[in-house]
Image (cartoon, rainbow, N blue to C red; front, side, top):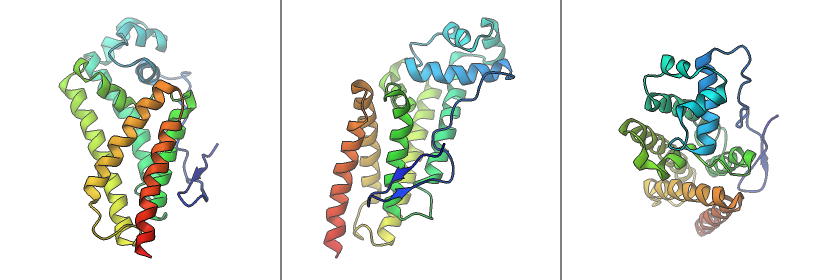
Amino acid sequence: MLVTIQRFDGKAYRPAGEMCDEIMAKTKLNNKERLLIEGLRVVHQHGRAATSVRDIANAADVPLGSFTNHFPSKSAFGLEVLERYRERSDAEVLETLRNDQLRPLDRLSAYIDSTRDFLAQNQMRDGCLCGNISAEINEHSDEIVNRVLKAFSDDEASIAHCLRAAVEEGELPPNTDVEELAGYILSSIQGAFLIAKVRRSSEPVDRFKRVLFAQLGVRRRELT
């Protein structure tokens, strides 16, 4: 089923691809795939630090020894899980922030809506995996920390790309510091995800979007 996303001007936008992909069924998958699929689910729900290798193997319904056969360490497994998670995030970015078929601020609106809708599938209980790892950062290896930092850096660059297009098309003032604004948006939305996770509600994300676009709307009116 396709996800309908509201544009910042109130009109509906339906992306070409599905943003909220369902996790594949376990049938006919090899043990490594089962470990990655179910491991991602368990780590996302309970946190990587709180999830043991036994928890992952049990969720995947495979022998405990199968984990060590496929992954040299829990950290190596964590990196592969992060890559799986980021595949969905990267596809989301391509359909929103880097989608040149949409007006720039529509892209930003679609990105916020799409990430919110994905997390809302479980009443915001799981939160953003990268944000969750950041909250328990002292429990992770340097490799995991660096991968999360890269994920945030990539997202910030995509937001800046979108904002730069908004400046070029006259949707934002020419003197807008897109790098500064992109960093603010990324930090704010991650904070909203964290509060939404605690409250089991998407309202913190919706509030952030309302305030952000109200401010951007003021700037747009100043141009006319």
